[in-house]
Figure 1: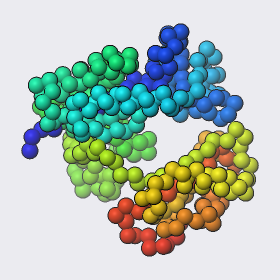
Figure 2 (figure 1 turned 120 degrees about the horizontal axis):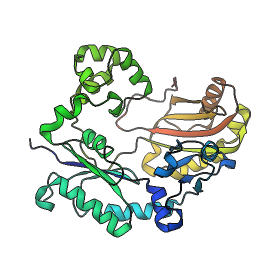
Figure 3 (figure 1 turned 120 degrees about the vertical axis):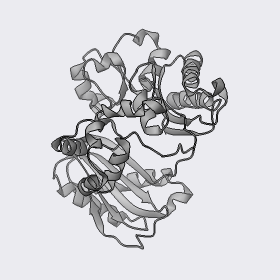
Figure 4 (figure 1 turned 90 degrees about the vertical axis):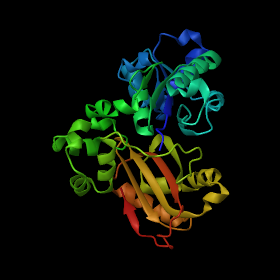
Length: 352
């Protein structure tokens, strides 16, 4: 089996960069894109000047403005961002058809079979980044590696406007000192558990055999065992199958009771149905998610083959009781029935 050549492209501060490109007076200033503070907004992204103040994506806009009083906070313009993303996709398509979009500003490219640049993935990444700058006046960072996991990690190492290459023969040396928290799927809880085991780097993790990791982490143990050795066989998927569909609303004024949350159901369900394609009508579960006034979160889901208003109401009541505080965000959604035969109409409640 030939070694794969994977490029991970990640645009630099995409939304903010587009706004600065279109309004040069913003350059050199802290800039963020997101919702307004008075309407419970959050930041979608911010530029590097803003990050010096500790700002980051998903930060409440009110907090961001307090930390950075001179912040230039701009509204989201999805039409403009999608248009730029489509233009970037046209550049990608000049090098390969194997493109897996993660978001509007991030994608994997499998260029293993491409004959561009004499087959050099490194040169292709350089050309792609140059073309993005030439045609859109936007910068991108890239990671080049034999698999998706390493390519994504590498794309973050020379940001902004840079790239990093991991050759097949360099994987062992590259991975050994890499913090385990860099592995996709290792969140705060898993990382804390690994630290308690004395595991900080992938090299530390390599000392644990597969049975021990599976005993401690279950199915995730197998993934940890592979990833700490730089192994990832997942393919670049040009078309991703939707596994869920959801909608959510952040309210200007918090909802004070569970009945107020339930009263929002008709509007939320109407929006959900608009987002669901005809093929999405076969569902496996319904779920809700709530964000409370103190920014704590909860979600509840239940097996169901039919979209039920009564079930959503039940889930909202269960979620609300977990905190019994005002609610700032309500979301509802469905898990789609993809190769799933487990539900057969059952409604056993599941919680996270």
